[in-house]
Length: 397
Image 1 (cartoon, rainbow, N blue to C red):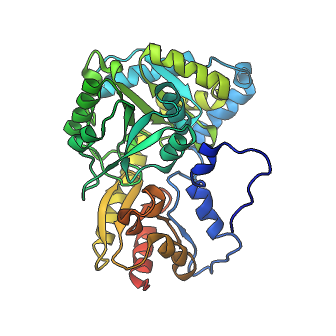
Image 2: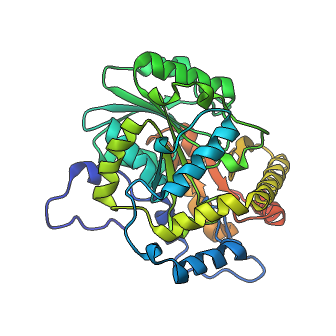
Protein backbone atom coordinates (compact mmCIF):
# COMPACT_ATOMS: atom_id res chain seq x y z
CA UNK A 1 0.00 0.00 0.00
CA UNK A 2 1.36 3.43 -0.95
CA UNK A 3 1.75 5.69 2.04
CA UNK A 4 0.20 9.16 1.85
CA UNK A 5 2.43 12.12 1.06
CA UNK A 6 2.98 14.33 4.12
CA UNK A 7 0.85 17.48 3.97
CA UNK A 8 3.85 19.77 4.48
CA UNK A 9 6.85 20.31 2.19
CA UNK A 10 9.13 17.28 1.79
CA UNK A 11 12.79 17.32 0.86
CA UNK A 12 12.76 15.90 -2.70
CA UNK A 13 16.12 14.17 -2.19
CA UNK A 14 14.72 12.29 0.80
CA UNK A 15 11.52 11.45 -1.05
CA UNK A 16 13.47 10.13 -4.04
CA UNK A 17 15.19 7.28 -2.22
CA UNK A 18 13.58 3.96 -1.41
CA UNK A 19 12.10 2.72 1.86
CA UNK A 20 14.44 0.80 4.22
CA UNK A 21 14.57 -2.71 2.70
CA UNK A 22 14.80 -4.69 5.94
CA UNK A 23 11.76 -2.89 7.32
CA UNK A 24 9.88 -3.51 4.07
CA UNK A 25 10.66 -7.22 4.27
CA UNK A 26 9.55 -7.41 7.89
CA UNK A 27 6.15 -6.15 6.84
CA UNK A 28 5.84 -9.19 4.56
CA UNK A 29 5.58 -11.46 7.61
CA UNK A 30 3.37 -9.19 9.72
CA UNK A 31 0.32 -11.11 10.91
CA UNK A 32 1.47 -14.44 9.48
CA UNK A 33 1.67 -17.62 11.53
CA UNK A 34 4.19 -20.36 10.75
CA UNK A 35 3.53 -23.93 11.91
CA UNK A 36 5.90 -25.55 14.44
CA UNK A 37 6.93 -28.18 11.90
CA UNK A 38 7.98 -25.47 9.43
CA UNK A 39 9.09 -22.38 11.34
CA UNK A 40 10.13 -19.23 9.54
CA UNK A 41 13.72 -19.24 8.31
CA UNK A 42 14.73 -15.58 8.49
CA UNK A 43 17.77 -14.99 6.30
CA UNK A 44 16.97 -11.35 5.62
CA UNK A 45 19.10 -9.39 8.08
CA UNK A 46 22.85 -9.50 8.57
CA UNK A 47 22.98 -9.01 12.30
CA UNK A 48 23.26 -11.40 15.24
CA UNK A 49 20.10 -11.68 17.30
CA UNK A 50 21.70 -13.46 20.26
CA UNK A 51 22.88 -11.22 23.12
CA UNK A 52 26.56 -10.62 23.85
CA UNK A 53 28.36 -13.30 25.88
CA UNK A 54 27.50 -13.27 29.57
CA UNK A 55 30.90 -11.91 30.64
CA UNK A 56 30.42 -8.87 28.41
CA UNK A 57 26.87 -8.33 29.65
CA UNK A 58 28.15 -8.38 33.22
CA UNK A 59 30.84 -5.84 32.29
CA UNK A 60 28.13 -3.59 30.81
CA UNK A 61 26.01 -3.96 33.95
CA UNK A 62 28.95 -3.17 36.19
CA UNK A 63 29.80 -0.07 34.17
CA UNK A 64 26.16 1.05 34.35
CA UNK A 65 26.16 0.66 38.13
CA UNK A 66 29.67 1.76 39.06
CA UNK A 67 30.90 4.27 36.46
CA UNK A 68 29.15 7.66 36.68
CA UNK A 69 30.57 8.77 33.32
CA UNK A 70 28.63 5.95 31.64
CA UNK A 71 25.54 8.14 31.84
CA UNK A 72 27.05 11.46 30.75
CA UNK A 73 28.09 13.12 27.55
CA UNK A 74 31.54 12.08 26.43
CA UNK A 75 34.03 13.28 23.81
CA UNK A 76 32.42 13.75 20.41
CA UNK A 77 35.01 11.54 18.69
CA UNK A 78 34.76 8.83 21.33
CA UNK A 79 36.48 7.57 24.46
CA UNK A 80 40.24 8.11 24.28
CA UNK A 81 40.88 4.61 25.67
CA UNK A 82 38.83 2.97 22.94
CA UNK A 83 40.42 5.05 20.19
CA UNK A 84 43.87 4.13 21.49
CA UNK A 85 42.98 0.43 21.72
CA UNK A 86 41.74 0.37 18.13
CA UNK A 87 44.88 2.16 16.96
CA UNK A 88 47.13 -0.31 18.77
CA UNK A 89 45.29 -3.47 17.70
CA UNK A 90 44.87 -2.31 14.09
CA UNK A 91 48.57 -1.38 13.89
CA UNK A 92 49.48 -4.93 14.89
CA UNK A 93 46.86 -6.60 12.71
CA UNK A 94 47.64 -4.63 9.54
CA UNK A 95 51.36 -4.12 10.07
CA UNK A 96 51.09 -0.34 9.89
CA UNK A 97 51.31 2.76 12.03
CA UNK A 98 47.93 4.07 13.19
CA UNK A 99 47.57 6.74 15.85
CA UNK A 100 44.70 7.30 18.25
CA UNK A 101 44.17 10.70 16.60
CA UNK A 102 43.38 8.81 13.37
CA UNK A 103 40.44 6.99 15.00
CA UNK A 104 36.91 8.23 15.75
CA UNK A 105 34.00 6.37 17.31
CA UNK A 106 30.50 6.63 15.88
CA UNK A 107 26.98 5.42 16.64
CA UNK A 108 27.40 2.33 14.46
CA UNK A 109 29.02 1.92 11.08
CA UNK A 110 26.07 3.41 9.20
CA UNK A 111 26.69 6.68 11.01
CA UNK A 112 30.38 6.33 10.23
CA UNK A 113 29.55 6.16 6.53
CA UNK A 114 27.17 9.11 6.67
CA UNK A 115 29.64 11.22 8.64
CA UNK A 116 32.49 10.50 6.26
CA UNK A 117 30.36 11.12 3.19
CA UNK A 118 29.17 14.42 4.65
CA UNK A 119 32.81 15.54 4.70
CA UNK A 120 33.48 14.32 1.15
CA UNK A 121 30.48 15.05 -1.03
CA UNK A 122 27.54 17.40 -1.25
CA UNK A 123 24.68 18.04 -3.61
CA UNK A 124 25.89 17.79 -7.21
CA UNK A 125 28.95 15.69 -6.38
CA UNK A 126 29.31 12.01 -7.27
CA UNK A 127 30.55 8.81 -5.61
CA UNK A 128 31.43 5.49 -7.25
CA UNK A 129 29.48 2.61 -5.73
CA UNK A 130 29.86 -0.99 -6.92
CA UNK A 131 26.62 -2.84 -7.65
CA UNK A 132 25.20 -4.89 -6.02
CA UNK A 133 25.60 -2.39 -3.17
CA UNK A 134 24.80 -2.12 0.51
CA UNK A 135 21.45 -0.36 0.27
CA UNK A 136 22.00 2.11 3.14
CA UNK A 137 25.04 3.48 1.31
CA UNK A 138 22.91 4.24 -1.72
CA UNK A 139 20.15 5.69 0.45
CA UNK A 140 22.47 8.19 2.11
CA UNK A 141 23.91 9.35 -1.21
CA UNK A 142 20.38 9.87 -2.54
CA UNK A 143 19.32 11.81 0.55
CA UNK A 144 22.41 14.00 0.36
CA UNK A 145 21.82 14.83 -3.29
CA UNK A 146 25.00 12.98 -4.28
CA UNK A 147 24.92 11.16 -7.60
CA UNK A 148 25.75 7.46 -7.48
CA UNK A 149 28.10 6.38 -10.24
CA UNK A 150 27.20 2.72 -10.62
CA UNK A 151 30.20 0.41 -11.00
CA UNK A 152 28.93 -2.91 -12.32
CA UNK A 153 30.80 -5.90 -10.93
CA UNK A 154 31.80 -8.93 -12.96
CA UNK A 155 30.41 -12.46 -12.78
CA UNK A 156 32.54 -13.04 -9.68
CA UNK A 157 31.12 -9.87 -8.06
CA UNK A 158 34.56 -8.23 -8.05
CA UNK A 159 34.76 -4.56 -9.13
CA UNK A 160 37.19 -3.60 -11.89
CA UNK A 161 39.57 -0.64 -11.29
CA UNK A 162 39.73 0.10 -15.02
CA UNK A 163 35.94 0.29 -15.20
CA UNK A 164 36.01 2.60 -12.18
CA UNK A 165 38.60 4.78 -13.88
CA UNK A 166 36.27 5.15 -16.85
CA UNK A 167 33.56 6.48 -14.54
CA UNK A 168 35.67 9.29 -13.07
CA UNK A 169 34.44 12.82 -13.65
CA UNK A 170 35.43 16.16 -12.11
CA UNK A 171 32.50 15.68 -9.71
CA UNK A 172 33.70 12.30 -8.38
CA UNK A 173 34.71 12.54 -4.74
CA UNK A 174 35.17 8.94 -3.57
CA UNK A 175 35.11 5.24 -4.35
CA UNK A 176 33.34 2.98 -1.85
CA UNK A 177 34.29 -0.68 -1.35
CA UNK A 178 32.87 -3.18 1.15
CA UNK A 179 35.01 -6.24 1.94
CA UNK A 180 34.09 -8.91 2.90
CA UNK A 181 31.21 -7.74 0.80
CA UNK A 182 27.65 -7.00 1.76
CA UNK A 183 25.59 -8.22 -0.09
CA UNK A 184 27.81 -10.46 -2.19
CA UNK A 185 29.96 -12.11 0.47
CA UNK A 186 33.12 -11.96 -1.65
CA UNK A 187 36.46 -11.09 -0.10
CA UNK A 188 38.38 -8.62 -2.24
CA UNK A 189 41.96 -9.73 -2.96
CA UNK A 190 44.68 -7.53 -1.47
CA UNK A 191 46.04 -6.57 -4.88
CA UNK A 192 42.57 -5.47 -6.00
CA UNK A 193 42.15 -3.25 -2.94
CA UNK A 194 45.62 -1.81 -3.61
CA UNK A 195 44.69 -1.08 -7.23
CA UNK A 196 41.65 0.90 -6.09
CA UNK A 197 43.75 2.79 -3.54
CA UNK A 198 46.24 3.69 -6.27
CA UNK A 199 43.42 4.82 -8.54
CA UNK A 200 41.91 6.98 -5.81
CA UNK A 201 45.26 8.57 -4.96
CA UNK A 202 46.00 9.33 -8.60
CA UNK A 203 42.54 10.86 -9.03
CA UNK A 204 42.82 12.90 -5.83
CA UNK A 205 39.72 11.31 -4.29
CA UNK A 206 39.07 9.12 -1.24
CA UNK A 207 38.88 5.35 -1.01
CA UNK A 208 36.22 4.54 1.59
CA UNK A 209 36.80 0.95 2.68
CA UNK A 210 34.00 -0.56 4.77
CA UNK A 211 35.39 -3.54 6.70
CA UNK A 212 32.42 -4.19 8.95
CA UNK A 213 32.87 -7.96 8.50
CA UNK A 214 36.67 -8.14 8.79
CA UNK A 215 36.43 -10.40 11.84
CA UNK A 216 34.89 -13.15 9.68
CA UNK A 217 37.31 -13.02 6.75
CA UNK A 218 38.34 -16.56 5.79
CA UNK A 219 41.93 -15.49 5.10
CA UNK A 220 44.58 -15.56 7.75
CA UNK A 221 46.49 -12.37 8.47
CA UNK A 222 45.83 -8.87 7.17
CA UNK A 223 43.38 -8.78 4.25
CA UNK A 224 45.32 -5.91 2.63
CA UNK A 225 48.47 -3.86 3.13
CA UNK A 226 47.12 -0.33 2.79
CA UNK A 227 47.99 0.65 6.38
CA UNK A 228 51.67 -0.18 5.80
CA UNK A 229 51.90 2.97 3.67
CA UNK A 230 53.03 5.75 6.03
CA UNK A 231 50.81 8.17 4.08
CA UNK A 232 47.75 5.90 4.11
CA UNK A 233 45.48 8.60 5.50
CA UNK A 234 45.83 10.90 2.50
CA UNK A 235 43.56 8.52 0.57
CA UNK A 236 42.18 5.71 2.73
CA UNK A 237 39.19 6.02 5.05
CA UNK A 238 38.32 2.77 6.81
CA UNK A 239 34.97 2.02 8.45
CA UNK A 240 34.31 -0.65 11.08
CA UNK A 241 31.47 -1.96 13.26
CA UNK A 242 31.50 -3.58 16.69
CA UNK A 243 27.95 -4.84 16.17
CA UNK A 244 28.93 -8.10 14.54
CA UNK A 245 32.03 -9.23 16.44
CA UNK A 246 30.63 -8.60 19.94
CA UNK A 247 26.86 -8.71 19.24
CA UNK A 248 26.49 -5.06 20.21
CA UNK A 249 23.93 -4.15 17.55
CA UNK A 250 21.64 -2.32 19.98
CA UNK A 251 24.51 -0.32 21.47
CA UNK A 252 25.49 1.22 18.11
CA UNK A 253 29.28 1.37 18.14
CA UNK A 254 31.29 1.91 14.96
CA UNK A 255 34.59 3.47 14.01
CA UNK A 256 36.26 5.62 11.36
CA UNK A 257 39.98 5.53 10.64
CA UNK A 258 41.12 8.59 8.70
CA UNK A 259 43.44 11.57 8.86
CA UNK A 260 43.17 13.89 11.88
CA UNK A 261 42.18 16.67 9.50
CA UNK A 262 39.33 14.57 8.13
CA UNK A 263 38.20 13.62 11.64
CA UNK A 264 38.07 17.30 12.60
CA UNK A 265 35.37 17.64 9.95
CA UNK A 266 33.69 14.40 11.01
CA UNK A 267 33.48 15.88 14.51
CA UNK A 268 31.22 18.66 13.22
CA UNK A 269 28.79 16.12 11.80
CA UNK A 270 28.77 13.91 14.88
CA UNK A 271 28.35 16.83 17.30
CA UNK A 272 25.34 17.99 15.32
CA UNK A 273 23.70 14.58 14.91
CA UNK A 274 24.38 12.74 18.16
CA UNK A 275 26.73 14.93 20.27
CA UNK A 276 28.68 11.81 21.21
CA UNK A 277 28.52 8.03 20.90
CA UNK A 278 26.87 6.17 23.78
CA UNK A 279 29.21 5.58 26.71
CA UNK A 280 28.05 2.07 27.68
CA UNK A 281 28.45 0.75 24.16
CA UNK A 282 31.96 2.14 23.94
CA UNK A 283 32.89 0.65 27.29
CA UNK A 284 31.51 -2.67 26.11
CA UNK A 285 33.54 -2.51 22.89
CA UNK A 286 36.70 -1.68 24.83
CA UNK A 287 36.13 -4.54 27.28
CA UNK A 288 35.48 -6.90 24.40
CA UNK A 289 38.66 -5.91 22.59
CA UNK A 290 40.69 -6.56 25.73
CA UNK A 291 39.06 -9.81 26.86
CA UNK A 292 37.19 -11.59 24.07
CA UNK A 293 39.82 -12.41 21.47
CA UNK A 294 39.36 -16.17 21.82
CA UNK A 295 35.59 -15.85 21.89
CA UNK A 296 35.58 -13.83 18.64
CA UNK A 297 37.86 -16.45 17.09
CA UNK A 298 35.24 -19.05 17.95
CA UNK A 299 32.52 -16.91 16.38
CA UNK A 300 34.64 -16.70 13.22
CA UNK A 301 35.01 -20.48 13.09
CA UNK A 302 31.24 -20.87 13.37
CA UNK A 303 30.58 -18.39 10.57
CA UNK A 304 33.15 -20.12 8.36
CA UNK A 305 31.41 -23.44 9.04
CA UNK A 306 28.12 -21.89 7.94
CA UNK A 307 29.81 -20.54 4.85
CA UNK A 308 30.98 -24.07 4.00
CA UNK A 309 27.45 -25.40 4.59
CA UNK A 310 26.07 -22.73 2.26
CA UNK A 311 28.55 -23.62 -0.49
CA UNK A 312 27.80 -27.34 -0.16
CA UNK A 313 24.05 -26.77 0.00
CA UNK A 314 23.92 -24.49 -3.03
CA UNK A 315 25.60 -27.21 -5.06
CA UNK A 316 22.44 -29.30 -4.48
CA UNK A 317 20.20 -26.73 -6.19
CA UNK A 318 19.87 -27.54 -9.91
CA UNK A 319 20.21 -24.43 -12.04
CA UNK A 320 21.04 -22.15 -9.13
CA UNK A 321 24.44 -20.47 -8.79
CA UNK A 322 26.16 -19.21 -5.66
CA UNK A 323 28.07 -16.28 -7.14
CA UNK A 324 29.59 -15.10 -3.87
CA UNK A 325 29.75 -16.43 -0.33
CA UNK A 326 31.57 -15.13 2.72
CA UNK A 327 31.20 -13.38 6.06
CA UNK A 328 27.42 -13.45 6.73
CA UNK A 329 26.29 -13.65 3.10
CA UNK A 330 25.58 -15.70 0.04
CA UNK A 331 24.54 -14.13 -3.27
CA UNK A 332 22.40 -16.83 -4.83
CA UNK A 333 21.29 -16.59 -8.45
CA UNK A 334 18.05 -18.42 -9.24
CA UNK A 335 17.13 -20.10 -12.56
CA UNK A 336 13.54 -18.88 -12.88
CA UNK A 337 11.87 -16.42 -15.22
CA UNK A 338 10.63 -14.57 -12.18
CA UNK A 339 11.79 -11.35 -10.57
CA UNK A 340 13.57 -11.93 -7.29
CA UNK A 341 11.21 -9.41 -5.70
CA UNK A 342 8.16 -11.50 -6.59
CA UNK A 343 10.01 -14.66 -5.70
CA UNK A 344 10.97 -13.35 -2.25
CA UNK A 345 7.36 -12.45 -1.52
CA UNK A 346 6.20 -15.92 -2.54
CA UNK A 347 8.92 -17.66 -0.53
CA UNK A 348 7.42 -16.21 2.64
CA UNK A 349 4.03 -17.86 2.18
CA UNK A 350 5.05 -20.91 0.14
CA UNK A 351 8.30 -21.90 1.85
CA UNK A 352 8.39 -19.98 5.16
CA UNK A 353 11.62 -18.28 4.07
CA UNK A 354 12.29 -14.56 4.46
CA UNK A 355 15.14 -13.45 2.21
CA UNK A 356 15.92 -10.13 0.56
CA UNK A 357 15.62 -9.97 -3.23
CA UNK A 358 18.58 -8.79 -5.26
CA UNK A 359 16.44 -5.91 -6.52
CA UNK A 360 17.03 -4.23 -3.15
CA UNK A 361 20.77 -4.02 -3.87
CA UNK A 362 20.88 -2.92 -7.51
CA UNK A 363 19.61 -0.11 -9.75
CA UNK A 364 15.99 -0.32 -10.84
CA UNK A 365 15.61 -2.64 -13.82
CA UNK A 366 19.01 -4.31 -13.35
CA UNK A 367 18.68 -7.98 -14.40
CA UNK A 368 21.38 -9.02 -11.92
CA UNK A 369 19.19 -7.92 -9.04
CA UNK A 370 16.10 -9.54 -10.53
CA UNK A 371 17.92 -12.85 -10.81
CA UNK A 372 19.30 -13.29 -7.30
CA UNK A 373 18.57 -13.46 -3.59
CA UNK A 374 20.82 -12.33 -0.75
CA UNK A 375 21.02 -15.05 1.89
CA UNK A 376 22.19 -13.77 5.30
CA UNK A 377 23.10 -16.73 7.52
CA UNK A 378 24.21 -14.87 10.65
CA UNK A 379 21.37 -16.49 12.59
CA UNK A 380 20.98 -19.80 10.76
CA UNK A 381 23.30 -22.66 11.68
CA UNK A 382 24.40 -25.51 9.40
CA UNK A 383 21.19 -27.49 10.05
CA UNK A 384 19.12 -24.42 9.32
CA UNK A 385 21.03 -23.85 6.09
CA UNK A 386 20.27 -27.44 5.13
CA UNK A 387 16.57 -26.81 5.73
CA UNK A 388 16.79 -23.61 3.68
CA UNK A 389 18.32 -25.48 0.76
CA UNK A 390 15.58 -28.12 0.94
CA UNK A 391 12.86 -25.46 0.85
CA UNK A 392 14.48 -23.63 -2.08
CA UNK A 393 14.85 -26.91 -3.95
CA UNK A 394 11.12 -27.56 -3.52
CA UNK A 395 10.10 -24.11 -4.75
CA UNK A 396 8.46 -23.94 -8.17
CA UNK A 397 7.39 -20.67 -9.80
